[in-house]
Amino acid sequence: MDVEVGAIVAGKVSGITNFGVFVDIGGTTGMVHISEVAKNYVKDLKEYVHMGQDVMVKVLSVSPEGKVSLSMKQAEAPEQREERRPRREREHASISRGADSFEFRPKQQESLSFEDMLSKFKQTSDEKLSGMKKTDGNRRTAQNRRKPQ
Image 1 (spheres, rainbow, N blue to C red):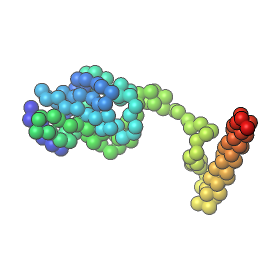
Image 2: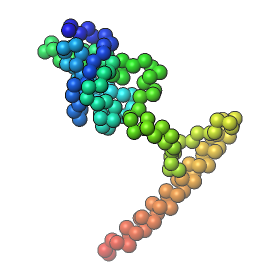
Image 3: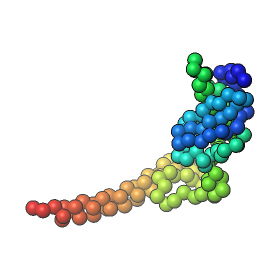
Image 4: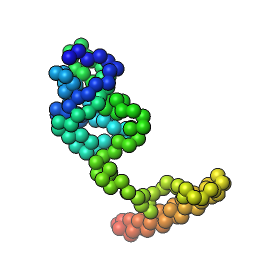
């Protein structure tokens, strides 16, 4: 099959390595680099694809030697890109953020003004920062005690 750069074609996963996924597209094998599998960071490709899986890929380039570079994330529609997550996150979709999260998000029911949101954010960040300073101060004191003089 003659592949055309920019074309979106269906393929089947024929190999998985730690740096990418090999996809058979009608008799030609191309590679999807790990950075082109999903929009978010991919640590383990086996969380996103499995052998024999049918996938849609976009042909990024074809080298003179015949190497085909593919992308899964560019082949998806924009609304699908947002939904692509590892299997373990899809299975546990209700993952909540911990108390150590530095991201402030007001509740949807609250209609706070920008100043109120800023004030609330500043208050929570000051509390977290003071807690970190106390912990850091204790560590420095302990280190100073260990130093031979």
